[in-house]
Every structure is written in C-alpha cells, then in structure tokens.
Length: 337
Length: 150
Image (cartoon, rainbow over all chains, first blue to last red):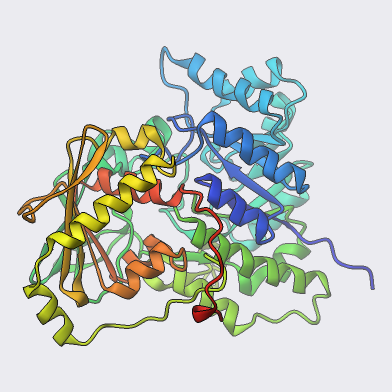
C-alpha cells in the first residue's frame, strides 16, 4: 500500500536554539517572528533579531525545512509602515511564507510581494470556508490556520469546500479559543495580542507567595490562588478561578493543553495539510520534546493507519509538558452536539 | 538538551538545607556572578538583553541545599551582593535537581513552573526576559561526560 499523505508538522521557534531543536527533531516547518509587536508573541527577550533570523532561515532551509514568519498582529493606527517593513524583511530573507491576520496587511502584501506565499493566521479568526475563500480570492492566501473552535466534522466541511490548505492546532496551551476576537486581556490591562502582540503582558503580572500558596494577579485583579503543590497555568483572565453564584471555579476555561494524538488518523484522513504546535514562548527543550513525540506519531501514521496506535509513552510525554499538567481534545470532540 | 547527560528528579536530605543555611552565602554569590561575567564576556548573553538588567538585583535560592546567591547588574558587570536583599527585583527558587535540569536543557522552565517546581517572584517581565535570555543562549558543544551518559 502506498504511504498515506500525512500532514506537515509545524513547530514553534522563539529563539535560534528552539529553531534548531525543531529542525533537528523532525519539524517540516518552523514559525518565528521579529523582536517587536508585529507578531503575537512579543515577549521580553523572545524572538529573532536580524542576525539570528538570517542564521535560522539558513539552518532550516539548507536542511530542506520551511520557515514561516508570523506577522500576525493588527497594524496600529499611524504605524502601518512598521508592519510593511516586517513583510519586506521576510520577503528579503526568502522565507517560505508569511502568516498574516490583518486584512489591510494581506491586501498590501499581496500587491507589493505577489510571489510571497501568504498564510492566514489563526488571529485572522476565519472559522468558515466562505471567509477563507474570500481571503483566497482577494489576496491569494494559500493556507489558513483554523481557530480552535471547530469540531472535527466542521474542519472536514471547511477542507472540502476550499482550495486553500488547512492547518490546525495539534498540541499546546489552549486559549479561550476565540483567537483574533478575544479582548479579555485588554479588559484587564488595556493591551491584547492583536494590539501589542502579547496576551496578559508580563509587566501586569504578579506572582505572590503566601503561606497558603501562590496568588496570581493581573493588573491587580486576583485571577487565581494555587495551593502548595497544585499545578499552575498561565496568568490569563480566561484561565482564572472566579466566584460565580457562590461557587469558585474555572468559570471560563481550565488551564490545559490541546493534544490531538488520539485523532491523528482522522485529521490526516479528512485532508488537513498541516498540524501546528503552539508555544513560541517556551524553551528549546519543550520544542525538542513535543516535536520528537509528534514526529514519531506522524511517521507511524505514514506507515499505515491500521498499524497506528497511540503509544502510552507519547501521551505521557505530552501530558507532562502540558499547561496545568492536563490535556484535552478541545473543540475537536463535542460528543454532546 | 546537552547530549548524554540526564539529571534525575531528586531532593537533597533535609539536613543539608539546615546545614547549608548556616554556611556563609557569599561564595555562592561570588561564583554565580563570576560565571555570568564570564558568559557575558565570551558573548553568550545577548547585549540588548543585558542592558535591560542594569541596576536590577537578583536572588537565586536552591531550596534543598539551603544556598542563596544574590547579585546585581551594574555598569555591565554582575556583582555579588554580600547580604541577600529583602526585596530583590527578581527571585528564582527551586530544588537543586530542577536548577540542574534547567541548565542542561533537560526540562522546560514553563513545565517546571506549571508543576510548581520552580518559583519566580518579583518583576515578572524581568523574569521573562531572563528566562528567554537563557533559552536563547547557544551553548558551545561540551565534551561528553561519560559519568552521566545514559
């Protein structure tokens, strides 16, 4: 039997060592960003300066892996040129594609760089094939990254009704799954991923230790309080525990990571082009661990679906790295629907 | 990960912390500051991130060893602090095994943080900067240590 076409594995690179870890452990492509607010992981000390960018692109491409540059925030009023410069820089570097969210930037980039491959970022929040086909028709978008809100059946409907390649998330921290439209961070801090490239920016975060455990505050708002050995999560509003009608619990979402190992054969069968790993903010160690595990799973899948079974060692490795030390199938599985 | 080295999860016996806490702490501070200056000198630490550490004080506490190192960054140099500041700008606390796993890139700092094995208090943005600075270091290839080989 001919080997099944399996999705590409797209891995995060927040630094040069992370990029090398992804490439060395089997990523088909890496995604990265500049050290500024043109990408949605604009954290202190993270990302690539020009020198690291040049070396990273060379390292990946000489090993026949792709480099995708995320320029996936929304150009702020009066500063459109900053975002244009980022796209120009990506084109000059010869990256394999840019990942954009802002419709204005998509339009501008498609005109000024007609040969540059455009991907629609998850921050673009296109959740149906009409939106994706619009981006294809108007800007020539070749791939779209789906927000983590669709069931597997809905993903399949999208794939069947668009010529655009579809990329879905395969592993990593879940956010409130409303990518590109979430203003919770802005509500608490006045800053959000779309505007400054960071959700719950670190300058607003406080970890306070007390004899009872650790309290998390975002711009003074108490988000959570963890007992001594209780697993912790990122300091975002969506993952806080709040008192609602006399009960204190994760009212919006639990700290958890998405993990699609279980449904990998279905994802491949419905024709998804690529699987993305979240986590540019995480270390080269995490990138190596997740890439290695998903590579092993995808390689096994390539050898035949009948033979594919999720190995306990893969699940254990991914669960260990997960936020809140737990994983979920997220929106992909909605048995109650 | 540094090839060939595996640091197991372990916790030093309680007596070590008790003894360690009674020993003078300045040698730790001196050793750490010296190591950081050496790393900066050979260009392992990115200059733009280093600039942002200027004037800030740091405490690194190895809980199960009872050891505390404190230093500050001034005029481009890491300087050991002879007394541990009460309210440093940034404080990292973990057991020895977690610090070793971090340094050898065996464990991801966020994973250790989620598991509550690493605590970061003080200026969170400064903590993120330091974490990302350490992650971005391209360690030279070290000779394999047969002692720890898998």
